[in-house]
Amino acid sequence: MDIYPWLVFTHIAGAFLFVLSHGVSAWASLQIDNEREPARIRALLELMSTSLAGTYVGLVLLLIGGIWAGISGGHFGRGWIWTALALLIVIAVAMYLIGTRYYGTLRAAVGLRTMQTPKNAPDPVPVGQAELDAILVRSPSRALAGIGYGGLGIIIFLMVLKPF
Image (cartoon, rainbow, N blue to C red; front, side):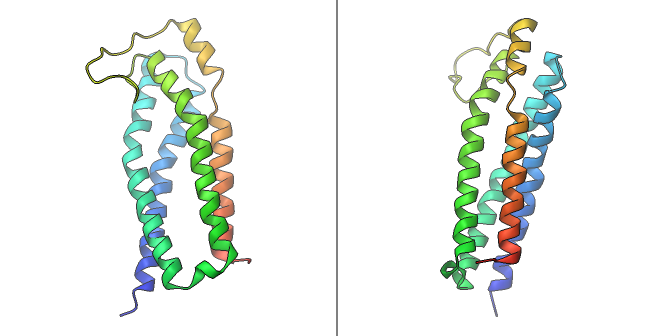
């Protein structure tokens, strides 16, 4: 039995789960740009957080399936696969660096715990509307969407057309 088609299937299924789950965060972050009501912002931030489980499972599946299929199919001798993998890493690092600080600050501003909140600490105290508005003005959501969607388009181009 040839395992290669199953590896490609795992890669594509993982990519689909990743894009579907991470898309929830993308659309929620764009919606937050139009919100000023702390309760609605909290709900959207919680939705973003809950979608991360599917995002990370999808990422692991797409990496395992893709790397294994790349090895099995002899693709690592070609430049397109290295470029796609490097681009995925650059996109992930850029989005993490740009988004993590902002969304952590926003979570604390509306009274939600962050990754930096100690387990035994009380929930953060929400800030006033003026301070919340000042934070919302600095939203990186459009830059993140551009990096994510643009990068994904380039990766798909590389994987489908295998130009080099």
